[in-house]
Image (cartoon, rainbow, N blue to C red):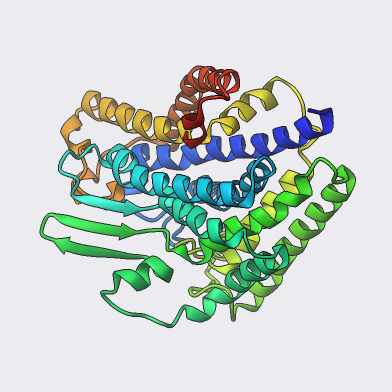
Length: 390
């Protein structure tokens, strides 16, 4: 393996690692911040700029990880035939869906009765892989066209509603369904346009081929990223298309800024994807030559993202139970029947934002030794096929 190839792979790992570290901040806020149980952190009329930015920075996580999963799929495919890659993506996609509904679902709630099932980011990644398993057999230009049509055009579907339809919700509309008195389903990540984000990543994966000129790649990624950000600013300013909620002028500049910078995530609007993916492209373009101890630490998380993701959910929830018990609130209230911020009994629980940041740092730091061990184990046991599913 040549040095340029290793550098390019490490730059992807670095961005993945950054995504994983920042993602833990949002999940820590959900389980520890007192205001999380009182109001939406993106509500301009109630939030503060610091609380909003704590939430806003994590918006980049899901788009980045979905896009980079597509890039990784292309890179894996260089060592496989199309048929082999298709089979791998299909099986890994099914595996992720199963994990979402079992291991990950239990991590969110610690509820042995499984009264709530979530279709969140791992589910979306899984189904996107299944779709990509078919798309890879098509010409690359068609994959690009498919991605761009869904990303730029899916907001045309915003006014189409089928109340009570789980199928439509899975396709394009965030919904919560009461299946029975004791069972509900959250569709948090509708498949459109998430499948297009991963497919777009697969298309861009060819830019990371060993024969591709690094300077040309950097130039293209910068151009695409800056263009996406500028397009976000212009279309968002016009405020006609690209986000079903739009933005509003408020009494203060800070409130208006919060509204402007808060496009819809569920499902991700065109504005949301231009804003976040634009930042991802620029970061990828300018991170390939970064070196040092901090870069290596963050990249370690990026090399074992699935392992880190599952562990960080369990650790955050476990620490929250301990905090709830020792703060006098009671550990049993953290055995959740529905999404944590929607339980009325949890109003009054939680801590200041500085505590959230300290817990977040502690969570990430405590996971590093385990992730480093698992990263080393994967590198030393590449012959074990099952490691590719972790």
